[in-house]
Length: 319
Image (cartoon, rainbow, N blue to C red; front, side):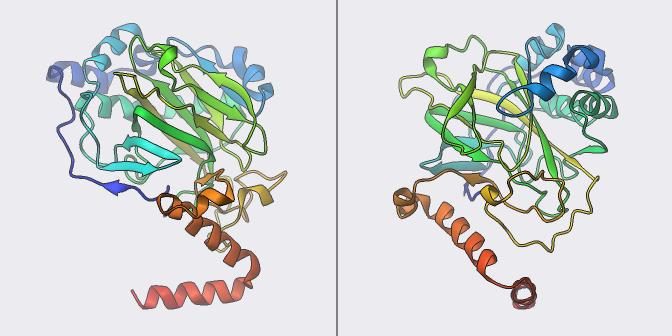
């Protein structure tokens, strides 16, 4: 995850408070009361053969009764979470990494980490031993909002969990902006292996979900939300990991483009969230966070691994 401006938490919702009984019922509900999931066997081929990389779009993802309750908890249009991104490739975007998410959505989020959902995703994707983010709503956040003029450039997501170093292999995103007008932009773009050419566009329709593989070449991004839009693009984001690999953290940070033919489960694959940024734009102050990442990758590329490990130990000792 790239650096973001930190702001005090704001009240999560400007809507009515969902009754405690509703939250309790959601906590006890089984997956069939929360999600409308297609039969895993019926969509396996569609997921695995999708281009430009494995993915599956599911409409009417949440059960209608549950969706009605969730809709009441969408945060107000002026609320920001404690991380706000302001560079040219992550602009006017805020993510939750604390306690500002409304209670019902927090409860629903736990269903994405439940055993039934993990087994379902394993059947669809063919991935083994999936686990949710063990640190939950911490580093990466699961409630994302992009406002007017906001954009999320072409990028690949982090290859490993920041602290546990387990491989990041799958993403699940659900869109929650009711009556979203496609003229307002915000379409999800799936790119080719270069991260420069759009192969598929997925409109962020209300209650639509997309499941997609996380690999060194799974470039994706969001088309700009129109400056004239009076709405914000709300989505829930969940990252899934696997314990299939040894998850070694000894490998230096690398350019994703050097990992051709590999998956994030390979023990030597290691990179952070990486944006496609032209060289001329790297020199702009607002994009120095991306320049810093390039420099780190380059240092790891030309420095012997033994020296990298020594420098890490020295840096840790000096903290």
